[in-house]
Amino acid sequence: MNELDSKSVEIRSAGPADIDLLLDLIRELAVYERAPEQAVATPELLNQALFGHKPTAEAVVAEWRGQPAGFALFFHNFSTWLGKPGLYLEDLFVPERFRRRGIGKALLLHLAGVARERGCGRMEWSVLDWNTPAIEFYEALGAKPQSEWTVHRLDADALEALDR
Image 1 (cartoon, rainbow, N blue to C red):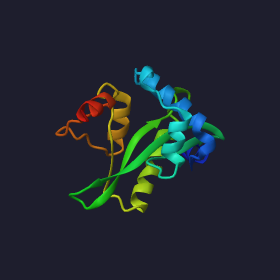
Image 2 (image 1 turned 45 degrees about the vertical axis):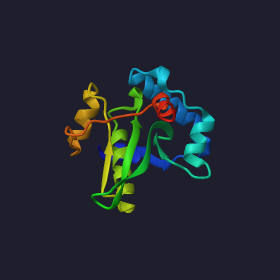
Image 3 (image 1 turned 90 degrees about the vertical axis):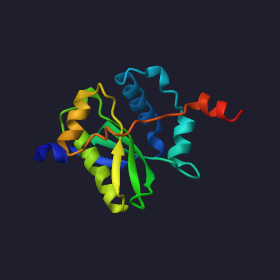
């Protein structure tokens, strides 16, 4: 990121007034990730998760010269081996029209700073195996793929089935 770019990007914590913006960006991310039908979050659900009585996630918004230009949504997990919290990056997205301006890097560096400030032992995230631009971006910053781990998931239907 050159000096001009770094002065053009601002990262701020999202607030309740950003719910519609965040949902728009989440839907745009879902289209990019080829699964728009899976983005079913509502303003009420997102507001509860981010700003409710017991928030379960946090978000930051990137602005490029005062315009919303991306977001990152994250939460804490925990490493029993390290005995420390970790920061899990659920989503980081910069719309195509704002890419190659250092915005994604600014978001990631901001979150790395949050992780350090909060005493996290690591920061991790998942990336789709076909998303070569993202993989190359992350690896250029020093991120290493964890190929020995396979993600498993119980979706809502599977969770319900376990209760029977």
